[in-house]
Structures are given as C-alpha cells and as structure tokens.
Length: 241
Ligand code: GLN
Image 1: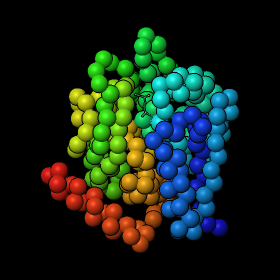
Image 2: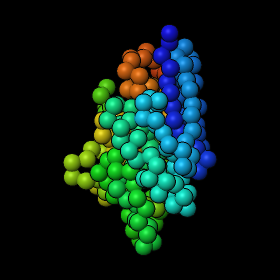
Image 3: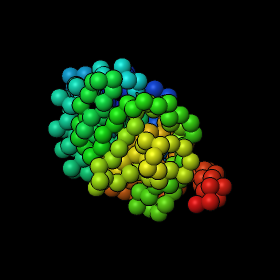
C-alpha cells in the first residue's frame, strides 16, 4: 500500500492569515502527484490530539487577537500531545503566529500568552514598526543549503535561546527580530518560520523535504521542479550566497 501523509491542522479556522491554507493544498497536491495518500484532519479549541495519528502537525499565521483565542487552549489541551508527537519524529510546521506559540511565551501589551515550549524561544511585542516585506533565508534541512523565500509581516520579535538553532540565516529581510540575522527555529523535525507566501507553494523543495521527513521516505523531483530550482539559484546568485 502506498504511504499516506496524515496531516493535522491546528485551529484551521483561526490561524490561517495570508492564505496559509495554501500550504496544506500544496502538500496534498505533491502527495497526489506522486501516488501518495493524503489525509487532512483539523483540531480546534478543546479538541484533543492524538500524537500517533498524524505525521505532520500544521499551524498557520494569526493576528494577535486570534492568538489570544488559541494560546491558552493550545497550552492546556495540546501541549503534551505535541511534545509526544515531536519526540516520535512527527513534523511540526508552524508559520508566524503559530511559530510564536511554539516557544515559551508571546508578550504583548502587558499580557503574556503561553506557548507550548517545543522550542526555546520567546517573542516580545517591542516598540517599533511591524517587520514587513519579502524575505529570503538560507536553510539546510539535511540536503545542503537552500533558499526559502516568503513574505513576513509581524509585530512580535522572536529571540532564540542560546542552544536553539534557527531555521536559517537571513539573506534579505528582517527575520526573527531584525537584529541577529536569524530566521525561524529548527529542532529535530519541529520547524517554525515567519515566512508566509504561502510558504510551501513558493518553496516546493521544502514541501517535499517535509513529506520525506514525516514519512521517512525519499522523493524524486517532479517535472517542472527544475524551473523552481533555477529561480532559487538565481536568487542566491543575486544575493551573492
Ligand atoms: N500577530 C503576530 C504578530 O503580529 C503574528 C502575525 C502573523 O501571523 N502574520 O507578530
């Protein structure tokens, strides 16, 4: 029987700004084009999650008010299961508002929203402009350095703990906090990033890598991927990396 990618989207009705649902559609298409199965489940407020029932957990971006709505529920009803899922090697992909909730806390306007503590990071709503614009980073997910391109728009600044690895280094844009040149976080198969776009349609190699990591398989490129690779290579050349 063909492998099946079992995806669980957390709070799909609240955490989905900037067309982050496109990330799920892209995963589905790339699986289907290869004859792999794809199953999508959702988990909203109060819904428990089964760490063994999914290969990839996804949480998209959200505005501050959406994060207020989900942060406590996520910490109370999903924290333990997410840790168990990460410990058994499931992929956790979190974008922007979802990424901020992977850490210890998101401090905004005198409030401190809890995170699930999957990675050692804190996010603070400091004075200063929102960090908005196109962003490109260089990241290595075990197959050599590659470009991830996207669009960022966040008021929160994220700071990684001393032993935490970023997803990548900023080539162009702001990244985690506009100071340290780091973007996102990466621990095992847990990945957080500020990049929307949506992220995966702009970086199909990353989508494939996540499918590989989630299912423990190796994938061949699909026809047409060479165009995407050429665009990424020219971005690297233009940036001198
Ligand atoms: N609300 C968060 C912030 O502004 C995240 C925004 C987002 O997901 N784009 O920092």
